[in-house]
Amino acid sequence: MSFPKKGKFFPGENGYNGKTEQLTNGGFVEEIAAALKRSLGDSRAGVKTVAAWTGANEKTVKNWFSGTYGPSGVHLIALARHSDEVLSTFLAMAGREDLMVAIKLSAAEDAISDLLDAVRRLGSDDPSN
Image (cartoon, rainbow, N blue to C red; front, side, top):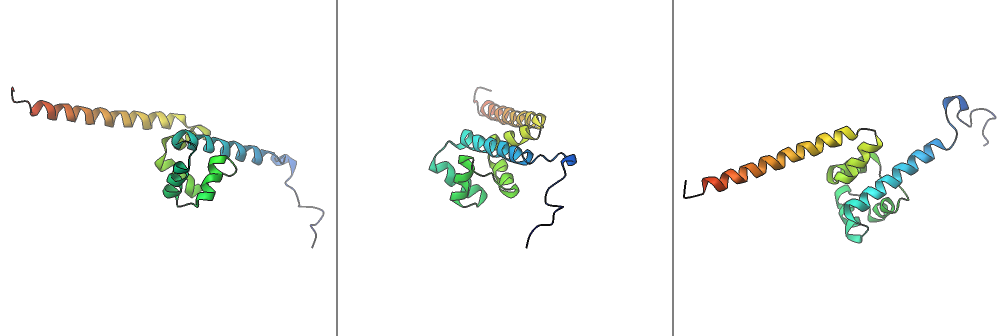
């Protein structure tokens, strides 16, 4: 069976030039690979950790680390849940860096609150008061 003369390709007027998706996916794959390496290093232990987080096969995870392929949506969600580097990279690619600032601010507030609680506990245990 052969293709009909019309309908094999997307029309040029829709902005399709044959390379757009490849460049977009390539950038995504490279950025996620770099985020994984920053987060976990480029070791077998990192691969095993990511495989445990996502439930993906170790060979699949090795492909993510090498930048050969990128994670699917479900796996990307699991990675973002466990890795701040991946989450930050994803938000930056989506043009939403402002959300990462809010996340970091919330984490800082939690850390300050925990520190104040610890200081108060130390003060209440002091027998000189």
